[in-house]
Length: 188
Length: 177
Image (cartoon, rainbow over all chains, first blue to last red; front, side, top):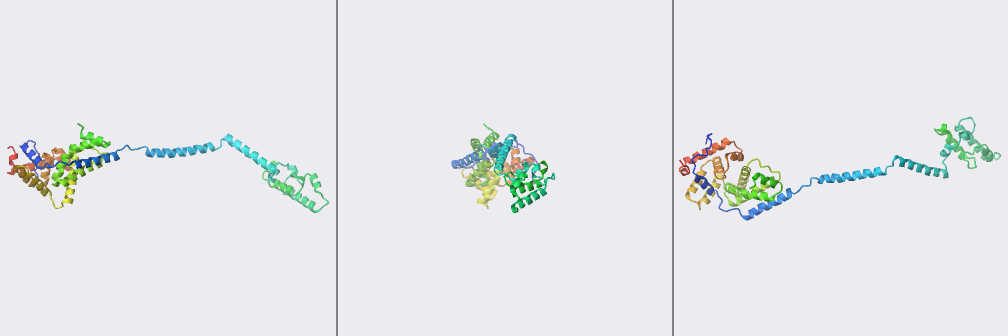
């Protein structure tokens, strides 16, 4: 059927009985049972309680804040343990004191050589401290040990007891050799 | 009395009582519609529940942009036809209407049975608009929105439906002229 484009007029001459009879015709004979009402409303209550309960917008924020707090705490703890300039200086001084104490009990050749006088290790008296001084001292120590006519005391009198232990031996040679090869021997 | 918009707003916030008010306000309207579409009381009750379950799923966050009937009508229609196809796949809209008319004629005067017969003679799209206008009490604009068709189409279909009724001698008594 082709629909005509005529607009519906509310005053179309219809009797109110038309609407009444239609409503009677399509009115369900039975009402909605209370069980259906209860089922719908229970479902609504469950749904609205579950989906509309107060959300916790700061749930993630709280986790992040907790993690940040741990990181900040750890950072501050490390800062507190890090030495300040003053404490670093004190620590260095303590370390130096301990080191000095250790070396005093058992001096290392290199450390001793740094405090001995350049003239003391200039065995050949040529004005320089080099490996030849160590070589010369080594020859003298060697000859003393093989030639009984040369006593160790004579070597001591020459001032070759470098480490001052009362003996002129390989230890003194080592000290001279160490002084000869030191990089900063200019300050000796 | 709170408006539908106010009730929806409250229900969006989790107010179950607002939803309950809304339910009782539209329960009979929806049930009458489901009864008309399905022609079967059990199916009608199923559709009633599914319709309000659909509305519930929209909450929270539901925005009522038109009237409540405009929102509910296509929902009821879609669910009703789905349920009817599932439970009674061979029953057409006309047969469902016949069942309604048959059950109505048991306790209604013959003239209403005559009216049911006249309605069965109308094309489905005209009958639908006629019933939406005079049974569901929807305005032309609401019908247009609910069916998603132009307002002019609604008016022309209604005009043609009334014209057919006027031509039918069994419905002639409903016209004053």
